[in-house]
Each structure stands twice: as structure tokens, then as C-alpha cells.
Image (cartoon, rainbow, N blue to C red; front, side):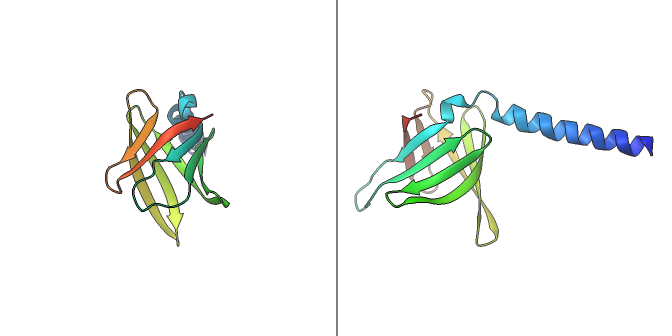
Length: 114
């Protein structure tokens, strides 16, 4: 029984450490990012990153979606549940940390505020 408790404590401790390690040092990401308009686009679209790994998608009508994010040094993964299916989109982070670019969907977001 003691082995089971020790294993559970280690497992939970590892998960907590992983969570904080992936969120630490990401203050630069927090705030509002604006979609770069391209020909044919209408309206405004934003991503708002919050501490704790939550990102909200907003437009001129308000928030329309919330997802989770996981950042690394040069990439950012956004994971959403769409109609019950898990979807992940990966963005490349610019060196100055002011631009997020997804080559697959050709979407680019620029930092506009905290």
C-alpha cells in the first residue's frame, strides 16, 4: 500500500512540475495578439493569452472560443476541442517574440498589447 501511495505522490508531483515548467517564463506571451489582415478578410480577430495556459479567441462581437496553449522556446501549440475532436495548431514564434506564424493555415498574429 505504501508503494502505491509513493507512486501516486511522485506521479502527481511530476505532473505539477511539468505544468509549471511549461508555463514559466511565458509572460511575454500574455496579452492581446491581432490577426494580420490579408486581402479578402473582413473584421478583426484576436487571440488573448492568459496566465495558466488559456487562450481566448475574440472578434468584434466578443469572445467566441477558449483553448489551451503550451509554449516552447520557438514554437507555440494551441489545443482546442472542436465538435468533440481534439485539434492542435502549431505556431512559430519570431525571434523578437512579437509575431506568431502558422505556415499550415497561413495565419499570422502580431502582439498588440498586454
